[in-house]
Image (cartoon, rainbow, N blue to C red):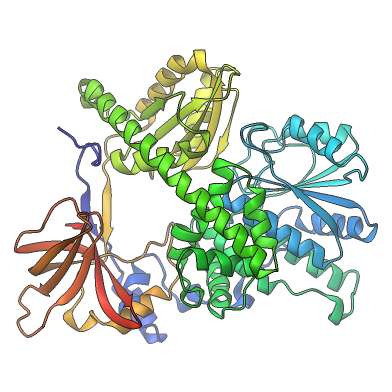
Amino acid sequence: MTSPHQPPTPPVIRQRAADPAWVAALIQEGVHPLLARIFAARGVHSKAELDSALASLLNPKPMSNIEEAAAALSQAIGQGQHLLVVADFDADGATACALAIRGLRRFGARVDFLVPDRFVFGYGLTPALVDHAHRLYEHDPVDWIITVDNGISSVTGVERAQALGMQVLVTDHHLPGKTLPNTLIVNPNLPGCPFGSKNLAGVGVMFYVLMALRAHVRDVLQWPAEKIPRLDDLLPIVALGTVADVVTLDANNRRLVAQGLQRLRKGNSFAGLNALFAVSGLDVRQATSSHLGFSIGPRINAAGRLGDMSVGIQCLIEDDFDQAMALASELDAMNQERREIESQAREEAAAQALARFQELAPQLQQSPGLGIVLHDANWHQGVIGLIAGKLKEQFYRPTIVLTNDGDSGRVKGSCRSIPGVHIRDVLERVDTLNPGLLLAFGGHAMAAGLSLMAADLPRFTEEFQRVLSSTVDAATLQQTLDMDGPLAATDMRLDLAYLLADQVWGQGFPAPVFVNEFRVISQRRLKERHLKLLLALEGETKSAGIEAIWFNAAADLPGRAKLAYRLSSNEWQGRSSLQLEVVGVA
């Protein structure tokens, strides 16, 4: 029987192919041979693609409407108008909001922020949220609403704002629907937008708007040089949101993240970021993209999942370290609570998913394109996206996890998908074939959200599976694990582990995983969950052994094993040593 912690079929191990000519060209340009092999296997064929200099960032000008947005913001700031940033309630939305507040205030803007309570207003700029903002600032009316990481689907919300006399600038990166809000929009995914990267996170879009505003005051308004604000020190916030939102790290996004990490490692970043590293038990001077994605991002996200994302935003805009530490500690506590809630719900959902697969086993033989749709009224709205992501990883199927939306009679869901299944397009197809079935939906290829009436859930499940079955084949649902081949004994060195750690890895540009045959010299359990190992390369007789760790190892290893691992370091009591991080048996 399939374990709830395993996909229905084992993954196929593949070695990434690196074009020898690309490898040679990179080495000729001065790239370390190991990195040249790794980069070439990820499609890099020129050192120019690895250039992380600020000057190499794409120019803002080609982005549709960005110069008009800069001119509008400049005029509003010059006239002392009241700006209100409306954020999304995830880490990308929080960082985009903090970036907007910090950046716009440097230009002299009078700006506040508002983030919707996901349990009251739902997602995006809704008419109800606009009315709330109108009441909240009735003694100082809002002239401009600026959305960050949302707004591309807020047609009725924009209409309501305009009816109340507010102008709206939408900055977003999500895929547009059939109908766009009738307002000024900056989004690299707008139809026909010639900007060279479609993968900017919401925080990246806002950073580009600020760059365009800076160019406007410099070139059009001709501000004196000493008055023009700097923006480069904001890049740590951009890096955090970009990594945390798991957008594809194309060359331009890698530059944004690399620049942010460089500034973090200098130790002179903002108080809130330094405090978040401190409560995470991490040294900010050794910051990596992995730290941003797996430690700092989740703590920011916890605020939006369980309570008020304003705490996360306030932490990122706080300049007093003591205040920042208090806010970071609050976020850390929320994250611990989130983990406990998620853990219980995930176990329940995994058991349900396993039972569902067993029930559908005969159909899966005939139609392997089925996904997972699970609903439980008791699951917390704030963690259903995390649960969907975990189930997607365990079962390697497009997954939708839903829970009740209060007493409204509606259910809300989060979707996570696999490569080759564009989940937003699947939802759009369901919507096209069944008008009115979905009350709302939106997102992108790998993640989306939706809402519908609870009574319609059986029908939706059937239609969702029907669309999947007609568009997804068995090959798409065969999980593959891409490896970077074996490492020579001479490459198993601490300096190369540090070299790899210094690079920017993430979605679409994954950290390297190597495969070698090992002899297991010794192994012991840590906390009954992890395996502490001493390994020797097969055929290597002179080595004293290589330390390794396998977190959450399912079983002990035999005397010989072919292991997939990452080259890493072990920092303990001031001592640094090479350590292999085992990720599985190949």
